Image 1: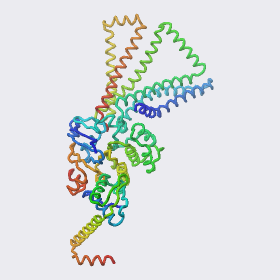
Image 2 (image 1 turned 180 degrees about the horizontal axis):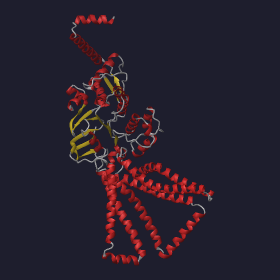
Image 3 (image 1 turned 90 degrees about the horizontal axis):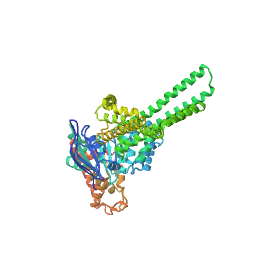
Image 4 (image 1 turned 30 degrees about the vertical axis):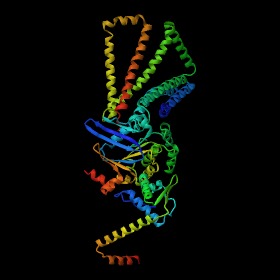
Amino acid sequence: MSTLLHCENLSKRYANVLALNNVNLDLESGKIVGLLGPNGSGKTTFIKILNGLLTPTYGKVTIDGNEPGVETKKIVAYLPDNSYLNTWMRVEQIVDYFKDFYEDFRPELAYEMLERLGISPKMKLKTLSKGNKEKVCLILVMSRNARLYVLDEPIAGVDPAARDYVISTIINNYNPDATVLISTHLISDIEQVLDDVIFIKDGNIVLHQTVDEIRAEHQKSVDELFREVFKW
Amino acid sequence: MVKKLFKHEILAFWRGWSLIQIALLATALFGRFIQLFENNTAVYDIVFGSTTFAYSILIMVAFVGTLFSGVTRFYKNLFTSEGYLTHTLPVTATQHIMVKLVTAVLFQIATLFVVLASACIITAGDVLVEVVKAIGYLIGEIYEYTGAHMVLYIVEIIVVTIVSLFSSFLVYYTCICLGQLSKKNRVLVSVGIYFGMSMVGQVVSTVLMTFTTFPVFEDIVMYFTDHPITAIHISLCLGIVITLILSIVFFIICRMVMKKKLNLE
Amino acid sequence: MDWILDKKKPICPQLCEQICVRIAKGEFEPNQKLLSVRDVALTAGVNPNTVQRSFEDLERMGIVYSIRGSGWYVSEDITFAKDTLERMLQEKTTAYFADMNLLGMQNDEIKNYVKEWEQ
């Protein structure tokens, strides 16, 4: 287990809003970590910075020793919470796209998962249902053999059966060299699959513990503790 | 990685582009075909007239369409939800801009060739022969007057055209990128910036024009009038340099916005 | 193959308990191969690390052993597993009686009640 993600005094200011305030964090490889917080807590800002979609105002973050850039993008697989698939492509074309740009992409795995869902490679992305589009996005991301997976709300807006599918896929793909960071507010569905949780509130990290520690210490589920910590 | 970017950029561009080009060529073919039935009836006049009208419209559509495609592709692929995928590819901002720019320019050049080909098609036969003869005559006349310089002119004209193609796209790219700096209504802001830039451009050129009437420039104007051949060279080269500098400035602005100021919705 | 897990308590010990129960019940024989970490993780919907820790804890208690490259196996001596099952049966019964007491039943009444319920 080595440190995969390292944040030092990471801060992000937009005009007069401090979205991230001096975040210090270390994530080890081989862990499934939940990034939990309400909307506007800084989760999205943090994730965008990890993916090089936003530059920090202060401080730094390194992934496997590199700051976000071409080198980190090779080893980070990102599932955004909105669909980026509004293109004219067919399923096989987007698989080809991923294969071209990501060395760690495994097309056989992707096709296998697609087949199990009954999604044919020839289908146009535009014609897929919302649920299927999200599953395709998830499949593309999980077919990568990345070091860091960043899943932003992978189960929101998806029916309960599909949620089970998402969770099974995450478990199935578990790799002791990789870290999975799941950002969500649907905690009770996902807490069993987490190793550690991070509570983020108004840009500050207010908690970073293992899930079993929380349960032992507070005699509550993570979901219940969350409701307490983030009570309005 | 750049090769892959090109591959997918060309694939994406080709879809819309090819349709227009095919329509253009089809209209040219039809226009030529129609001429076989040439007679003095009103029917023929209407049919041929409307065909040539459609044809000329399609030529405009071809050029403007390619420009439009290039600009909207840049915006859509980098700054809408697609941007979440594009910007997480292991590719630098410079590579992204370069590949889109070069592809757009190449397709515009290809449009030019298709338009020329369609022109040959629609005038195929006697008309084309006459046109070629006339062009040949014109070239001969110019050569007599300018000599070896003509070759240089041709090179300069080609270079200035290509550089202008680059800057034509870069202007819009820059407006799009600058629009991204605002929090809301980014497209509107981009359009506003475009008009702003155009106005500034107009003002600057008018000012420069008035400068040339100053006594200081009288000697230069005299020199130009006396040495037209060199004058043309200087104008063309000046055009190349200015367009090149503007293009580089635009490119740097786009790259800066993409690297440091990116904030997708 | 249902795993009943209470999210309010640490999962790891719960997994240990339930694996013990299954061994004690005879679902797995001594020296038989257990489910893989991955299978348990998938069927329980639980983090593989947690399952791994559970197996390791069970190994420390002598209930299972691992063969490198092969997986986890039930130990020859399953006394501890049986003890765990016994303990859980006791806990459940104590809890049941406590619940019934709250409803106003005395212990003897409860035993009769159960006899009647069975018929």
